[in-house]
Length: 264
Image (cartoon, rainbow, N blue to C red; front, top):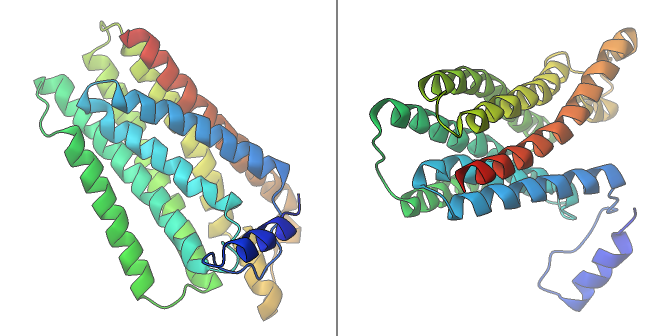
């Protein structure tokens, strides 16, 4: 779907908007994926507003994940690389905030103590994002190499924290397996298994330099690649990455809907 004309007309009507210098082409798959992440974000954010503070970090983290995925629909992401870097950084902050909530919930199951307030979580998250944006803005404009490093950092942090979160969720389930919401907690294990495969597949492609950002880089630099010798592995990893991206969004929305039902 070519939306170049639409956004060029939009920038002519509203001159304060940045100009469009690249073609804006959004494929149906990206549109559908961002929509599913929007649904998941809506469920998670609504859940955080209507339940105990203990859920706030987890819910806000998944809402941030939608924000990070929405770069695929950002018409200026090809022109202003800083925006892409910010999206990747927000995605990394998302899993850090989620993991904080998971660890906090584990402490709660052991001590039955909750400290802090929802406002603290909201303000703290905003300040962290603002600081990340400031750091990115003060540094040189990200090159294709730098953007790839941001993406690799995102995949790496997600991959390892998903493993820790799966283990922690299992520990939480053992502590509260007689609770009415125990199965809902266990559902988060499925969320992180899906996310582990999703981010793991992306990390695998980047480690062996079979990812699209690297192929875009070497197209200009003339560097050779062995991707043709391993096309089967590449195709499987790409399929896992795309499929489990969708499945993660489904599982997030489904888990929060299920928990909301259990808590009523």
